[in-house]
Length: 177
Image (cartoon, rainbow, N blue to C red; front, side, top):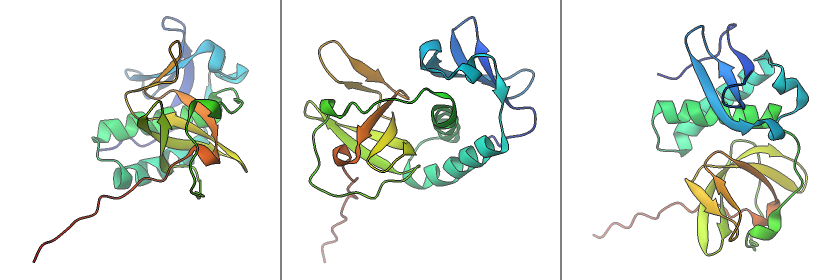
């Protein structure tokens, strides 16, 4: 069963781990992977889990099970991290140079899955914010090695131009008669 937002949810800065967290109840806290330097100033002091945050989270919690084959806990984790990334992280400049260009024009929207190709490896990403020419995406694959000295871990975000997003291909089912 998926966790649904309630009036007790609120964002906090966990000083022990130096990361953003969300308090789900008096006994339950969800720790995001987002550190101090990534957060907007309001997130460092704690803030409410607003109606807008709840709508975004619920939207993702409804669409992710249709496109990802992961557990309910994985859906909640992904939706909470995406909500935090959308509302509480500092804006980024695109860093498209790490990724291969796509020849296909894509329709990009929040909640849509794409593939990024880097160093001959494809990784799965989720769009958490979209603008006219670029999208902020969250890595869903375990890791992505960008260069010899830089890599992304699961749930980290990066902003890329739309021409770096590759559409996902559905596996074709062949039936022999």
